Length: 226
Image (cartoon, rainbow, N blue to C red; front, side, top):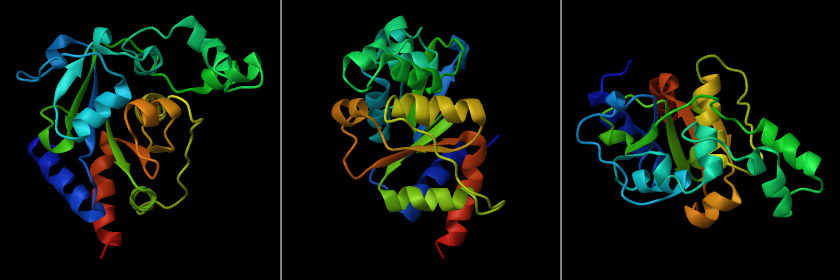
C-alpha cells in the first residue's frame, strides 16, 4: 500500500510529466461507512458519476450515496445501486436508436463491466488530496497523454495494452468497474452521456488505472519521458 502522503507526490509527477489540465481522480467504492475518512463531506447535489469525476478532477473531495447518483446505469455499474431492468435488457439503449435490434443491445449491455457487488457510496478526490486508498485512479487527457500512460503500462513486462469499450457507460463501466474487476488498466473513448453532461471534451480520452499499478506507471513514465 502506498502511504497517503505519496499520493500528492504521484499526482504532481503525473501532472508535470503529462501536462494534464486537471488532476488525476482517486475513486473508492465504499462498502461500509467507516471507510469514509473524517472530513470527507457528502455530496449536496444529484449528479452523474461522470460529472462527479469531473468535479473531483477540478478540486472537490466528497462521497455520494445512491441518492446522489443521477444516472442509474452508472450507479449500477459501480454497484452503488441496482441496474434497472430496462438498462440490463438493452431496451433503454435500443429505444434511443443506438442498436439495430434489441438482441444486439442486450448483448452489449451483458458485456458492460459491472462490479457485481453492493456498495453504500462512491468516494472521489483529486489524487493529491486523497485521504483514502482509491480502488481506481481515473485520468482524463488528450490522445498523446493517454498514449504515454499506455506505453508506461507495458514498460516493465512488455506485451500489449488491451482496451475494451462500447461507447456506452464509459467513465463508470469502462474506467472504474472494469479495472476494479480485472486489476488491469483500461482506456475508453467516452460516451454520449459523459461528453454531454460531464463535458468531456472532443479531444479527450479516459483511462482507469488500478491503484496497485499507479506507482509503477508513474515511475515508467519518468523513464520514457527522459
